Image (cartoon, rainbow, N blue to C red):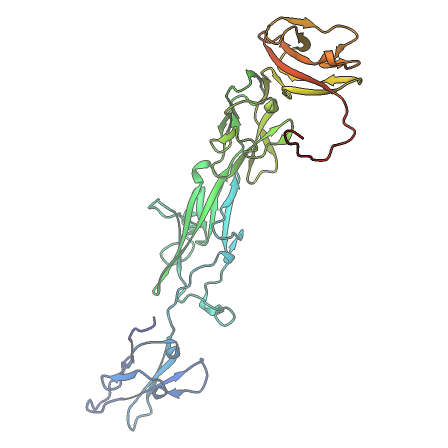
Length: 433
């Protein structure tokens, strides 16, 4: 690794010279590539010799020290010579990239697997130093790979099993294959995934340069379950009442699924009405104050990642018993003399709604008089066939509903006047003029 001291010791040959006083001659050289012409090590910086040149010490090891080193031992006046070769490489460990895996997942994107299917997370990066001449950032030496599920202390076993000599242990091949294993120590394989297999899985690479890892989230999704999926419910409530519609989900993938509602077969947008709220991740639909426009057929649906189909909850029909009210209220109405006059009165409400008109006999009396011909009431509209001055006065519109015998009144003051055909200029009038 960079910055460390590296010591190379030239082995001493077993042949002993007759004259022990004759010291061997040790010469060091280097070859950037094997088979090239040797160069003197003096061309490198941070190089020292020790123990009568039998040791080569590289201080502050760096990339330029990576090479093949030779030491040659010989004796004066002797034809014997011994040459030893050392290969010195820079230990490095690079973090694996998500692009090295299949399926290729984006950052923070989980690997989604449907329940009872197989999960295969394959690692295709070439970690062999022999491939370094065509690939950048190759870890050296080849790292050891271990898979494990986070928060679990035991690592995932390797299949086929490997003996201590890094060879496949054929004696264990006859045993049962585990459901979860690291294929050849590289690829994570989970057969027939269950809900318990969801979680974070970490691949750890280690060598003399250190430790590197990458984490993947596996999400096992499954179809939702409902309490009563095929039933139909009907709710009939008064206007301004509150109610909560429940999707009736017994179980679903969380995360990995979404819940949405439809009203009358149209997707219900979130919070389209301030008096309506989606709660519990969309599993319940709460109405704070029911309004007539809330009436309709509601149904929830669940969409799960990894599945094309959607699943539906029970149908629920919501009937809103609208309170009796006038669609438009007014207190005065102007009618033109010698013309037909029409005064509308529309009401809505739950049940059968009827509208009647009456005329007050006296402004200070509560007595009412029915409308007499030729005047008439048509569809809730009071029709005065030929308006005269005596038609001015107070009229009462009464709306009734068969639901709870509800009744509401609206008093309208009718003003009768002629049609203005021109306007007088503005004038000031003073006393005694």
